[in-house]
Length: 254
Image (cartoon, rainbow, N blue to C red; front, side, top):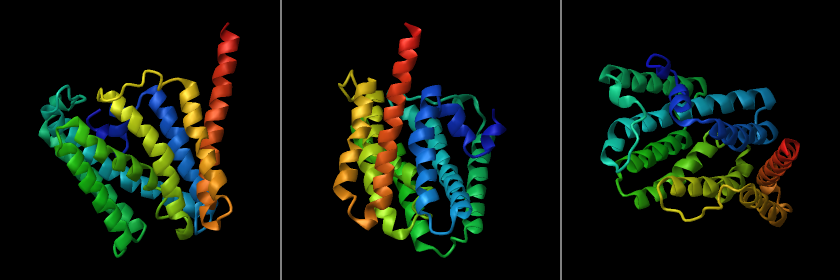
């Protein structure tokens, strides 16, 4: 595990992803991002998907440093903080994990030729500052503000540098209104700050994401909203098919 954790993404996979979490990330992050860049990318399907994957690798390399810092330092200061196994790992491995991720990040910068891109550096500097604040804050209620933006950075990282410029803000809007706000409920629940026992019901999740279709309906006449309309329809379709699938499974089990 220690050696494998030098590879970006694997620390996230081994410490954060459960069976249900993988399905959520797959449909509401990774496939959603590939759909957006595949249809609304600016360089052609294959190149856009390739660039999106490299952008995601850049993102997860830095983001996992935030996870590692959280598990090693911040969790010790939090009430009920989870160190996720890092308490039995020597400092050598922790520094090696961080070094390997910084190396991969800068290799991605080189591959994507982003050394001179102000937009690239401001995006990732803002993300790093946000994660730093998230890790140094002890008050769980204050961390709510930083988590919102961490979720937004997570969704936008593989998209914002690949999608057509005219579509960026529309996608960012739908991500904030739908994906980020839903993730926020989960975070609040995990910190004991939410009194919504019915949040996990399929009917709640279904309505939550299907409501994004109202935003799609309101903005569909505008060309600059095309990607956001498609993303809203995609979210609605995913939860609709999920509800049908779960209902069929329930019927067959009876």
